[in-house]
Amino acid sequence: MARDSEATLDATDRTLAGVKPVSARRQLVNLGDRVFYIIAKSLALLVIVLALLLVADLFRGASEAIRQFGLKFLVGTTWDPVTRQFSTLPTVIGTLVKGFIALLLAVPVSIGSAIFITFYTPRWLRPVISYPIELLAGIPSIIFGMWGLFAMVPVVRVIQIWLKAHFGWFFLFDGPAVYGVGVLSGSIILFIMITPIITAISKEILLTVPREQIEGMLALGSTKWEAIWKVALPYARIGLFGAVVLGLGRAIGETMAVTMVGGNSFDLIHSLFDPVHSMASQIASEFSEATYSLYVSSLIYVGLVLFGITILISLLAQFLIWKTSKGKLALLD
Amino acid sequence: MVLISHYRYRKLVEWANWAGMLLCITVSVFFLVAILGYVLVNGASYIDWEFLTAMPVPTGETGGGIANALVGSFLVVIVASLMALPIGIGAAIFINEFPSQGFGRTVRFLAEVLTGVPSIVVGLFAYALVVIPSGGFSALSGSVAYAFIMIPIILISAHEALRLVPDSLREASLALGIPKWRTIMGVVLPVSSRALITGAVLAISRALGEAAPMLFTAFGNSFWNVNPTKPIATVPLLIYTYATGPYEDWHRKAWAASFVLLVIVFFTSVLTRAFLRGKANE
Image 1 (cartoon, rainbow over the protein chains, first blue to last red):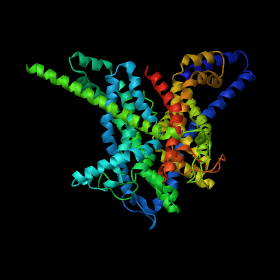
Image 2: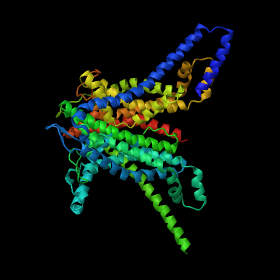
Image 3: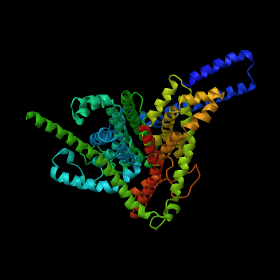
Image 4: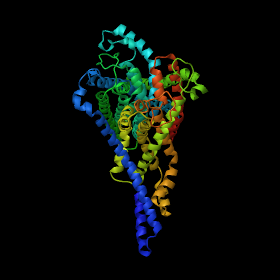
């Protein structure tokens, strides 16, 4: 675009150049352009350098632990700073379980909300209804954590005790119910946090469904829900899946709220009530207590694993959303 | 008769789904009201002039405030903005104004991937990049972590903003013989300034609420500090320390600080975000 006009401009200059010599001022102008180009390009390069530096620094920081434990770090179940044995399977499982339970709750709620906003709400009312959801997305994680710890956990605790008393024979409910903090609390707080994110993106995805297809379905005598179920959702399914995957990525990388309500234990979970670290909360709560370099290095190794998982998830989500929206959506959430 | 009952069934499904989806929205709204209400009830009453302007007092004494954390948060974010704004907007200018085949797209793609990096990992990065070489926790390392969170947000929003500037404006300026760099600085950037500022504010408010990357960079400090090479207190970090502490008074202060943080973040982020979204949806 801008380049075409530039080319024309250069061509005009060249024909003029035959008539009179290039002035000193013209050269200065070129110099200005060149300097500007170099500055802009180096800033863009800096972004790439920073991204590479991030990966390199994580590997460098984790190198001691990688050399010591290798890939066994990922399958072992011991995290013992006293005997200097570190491996992180329980927290990886804890992270994924919390993330998936949060998704299980968040997917129906957020996609339902998105459908309601997109198809059942008149245009002028849409901002009014989606505004509270955007407000929810703007609350800092630490405040979710605090609310979770003081307001939600006591309620969850009562429910857990009741569940254990009546359904304790079921393995999911056969855990230490009296803590309150644990897998269930962590999952619920994550559910509240990722719902607005998935809703916002699903809403944008659903808006890309061609109006004519839905109207065609309605003209055939379908109800609105039938048109949505049989036309809109199949059309948008890949993008919606992308939105869900993005939500999972956020849930897995979430730190402060999970640190405060997820319970901080390094043991494998057996029930919904067991307290367990997620990878992020493990780093957050242990880092200041890490007294020797292998300990620090192991925590950075956990960070590297977390980074790897979230990047894979994020790439998948970007790809799916891009595939549906054809690059029309800018992802800021 | 069969036909009519089938029609009724379809109507019923329609209504059931409508009600179900309304319930979905209600769930989100309920949690919003619950959280805001809780922060308001527990936090607002504790806010007074002293809380905002006084230093923290030793445990057990009454009174005291969060002045050092407020100042610390703003200092760390301002320094982070000084780093992130030139990089983010400069890179966006390069991507949009100097089209290159793969390079620009790579940078944009990387920025989108970087928005998904967990904030705790950003903290580890800043720790390895600044804290280890410089030998200690510092406000500056906190700024580096914040800047790293802000850059991709600023870059993407700036790129979207520059995209919307019509080419005819650029061409008109170039046709007047104005060099390209002055066209960009004097025409393209001013035209898109509103959207650029919106993006920057969004990034700043996102950073202001982050506690995780500050845990092992800025580290927190219970005393007054404006020295960038020393640990500094920030509001989210202070909330974390107070909320997980054992004292009733600390919890009250954590709620009050949460209220302050919410007010700051909402005033900056959500208003501009709604403004941006509203414009985009028209």
